[in-house]
Image 1 (cartoon, rainbow, N blue to C red):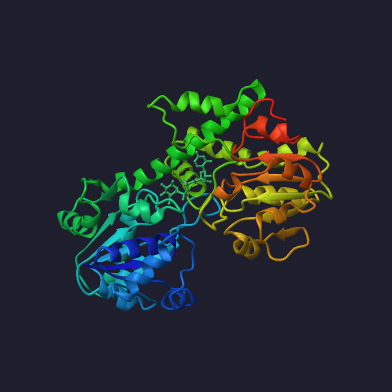
Image 2: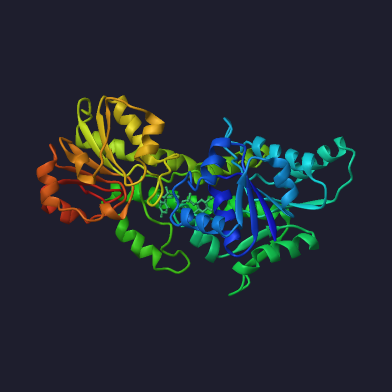
Length: 443
Ligand code: UGA
């Protein structure tokens, strides 16, 4: 099957590489010439385990190619995936300008029947807007060509995207057209062999499914963080509470890890966008707004704990931070809790010595060279001359610490464990002050 994918970002590249790998012919198109040149030279502009190899393999086999030529790309595929960004507008709504620009492009260049597939996360009602945009362009050209628009949201996690694409729990397609149904079954057939994962539904239901899934997951996180804040004040340990509640299969263990707040390119943006949609239709979504407020407060926690540890005297202190990415196995720092912490520390006159296995370049790109930021090459280099250590991301490499050695290295023996990786007693036995998330009287 011939497939065109607009947008060679995270979702576009993973979708393209995975569909090529099962034998489809894929053309990826992007407006960014530099990015396309890099992709053609075999470089993958984002870090995602396995993606570079998958693209290289399928490029060599002639199943995936990259271009900036939109006319050629529209001509190519029966399926025209839209996988461009939908950033948050100032008011929190999803900005559809890139999605609608692609719809315009498709309308300007198509010569025969096409199926436009909305893969980007877009507010309910976007498929109708895409349809109107394509139709308006065809009308300008005086053409009356048939086309369909369907919704096919993605549920990929950064760091596990290829695995999620290949072995995801469901493939949601929003359409009422039999022709689209057949084409999407053919497209995803190779990923649908072991059991039937295809879920066909109405277009609007598919669009809302994506937001509801992310909002539900974000709710679980904010809920446990709220419980952590209660536990802290009530002298309970949220880790014990987490075990206690997760054992109930109706609740389950997943996504109830307390921490320093959710980040990334999806949860913050999608929760805001859903809250905005709710306002627009005159039904303010109280729960969703609370999820966001709790998360904003949680991102401040690590700074508050340092203030507590140093009696608010952070000016002139050097703070070591392990983990800059919003979660392990990615270099993505969008909305990362580490950013809220670093910015608050700088504001308070402290210096930061940070280490992340993948995100140093990204951090340099965001903050540039500055006197109060050192990016260490090795985990333990970040500790040199530091007063305290804060763990922001639960990379595997941070799970083993020689605490007596850490005690010797730090100017002040303070460990702020933003992901509850350690047992407070073990840390305290080495003489360090331990600050976790929601662990009662943990100092
Ligand atoms: C998320 C969803 O998990 C995917 O299903 C969805 O497709 C994707 O958004 C999207 O909309 O594209 P992702 O943003 O890659 O994927 O990251 P997650 O692994 O879900 O983590 C999100 C954040 O929640 C991280 O900051 C993580 O540290 C935090 N988190 C997660 C917790 O604080 N506690 C938990 O128990 C789980």
